[in-house]
Image (tube, rainbow, N blue to C red):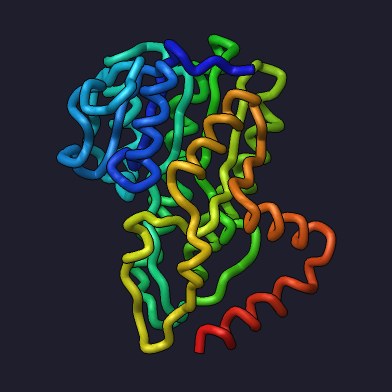
Amino acid sequence: MTALSGKVVVVTGAGGGFGQEMTRQFLRAGSHLILSDLHTDSLPCAASDVAGARGRILGHIAADLSEPDAADTVFGHAVALSPAVDILVMNAGVAVSGLFTDVPRHEWERLMAVNLLAPMRLTCAFLPGMLERRRGHLVYISSVAGLIGVGQLAAYSTSKFGLRGFAEAIAAEVKPYGVAVTALYPYFARTPILESPHYGDSRPTLDTSRLSEPEDVIAALLAGIRRKTLHVYPGAIPRVVDGLRRLAPWTLPLLLADRSRRGK
């Protein structure tokens, strides 16, 4: 088991829906946080901003993770605040929807940089210290769209598939050194990412009655971190999708086609 009290945790994308909920739940668990986002305006300035907080906020880092050097910026500021980072949560992510041919190239290239290249760059920066200390925890926020390819979310699905593969590969490499890895696969949740840019006239459908609640998703994540679980599926939909992917993959295109028809 991994105790969260007293641990130093870096969270990227801390101003988003999941990031804000992570901040609350980590602080209540007694963790000490270094929060990063594109802008720091939406980040709490002190743990006293969060009810029931037992941990504290060590500092804030503004960084645009679509830029190649941003991961090094986050790392440099983080280790200046705390030389030993116990948990790195790579939560920052963006989305665009629409047929792949309708999405401007600069948009999906930026998405790939934030969703996939940035976690790889952050891992490259933070992992050597964890290996040297023989302890640490890397956390990757993937998606149900990283388990099955979702039409009109081609770039997003690709980035989340890549993150799943990277997490599995890194987990195999770091296990002998006492470093843990956790990957999270949430269904679509009530966060601002649902309002991401859309391109073209054809729109994907989404059953809003089944949206996940951020507090439930992050509670499952923290439980998975405590147990050092590699793959965390928060809720029924991610568990069902993963089960069908493994046992009856031919059913998934049928389910997606039915979802599309019901949305018309």
